[in-house]
Image (cartoon, rainbow, N blue to C red; front, side, top):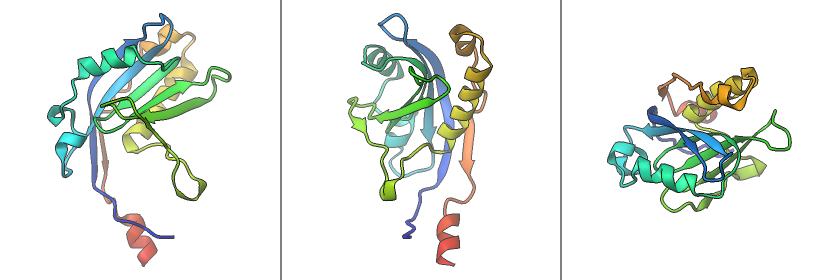
Length: 164
């Protein structure tokens, strides 16, 4: 296995809102997230990027994504998590570029797929718990995670371990 260097990771939630789609049924919670302390902050931080959160919400509301779920919206990648329409005990995920809506594949090496960075994993955990405990979609939508800060203390530990 080849272990590559990894960038530092200090993320936080900048903003939150609920976006109801133009189809009248689909609705998604949006967690606007930033990663700070990296080169090219305009790529990773909402306060420094050219994207406007309101315009992003409008564009997403008019997009083809359907269902009920939540987004983790970073300036460089958005992941759409929805409760599976054919089996709502499952959660689907896909990704796109927020600048133009282009699809981002989550397929990685050796047959693996990317699930989540730390912020996405923590938020997905909370959101799935809200979904499991809610008796209705509206009850689910009334809840949001209060987790706002996410940091990985050592983003080189796998490399350090593997290289011995």
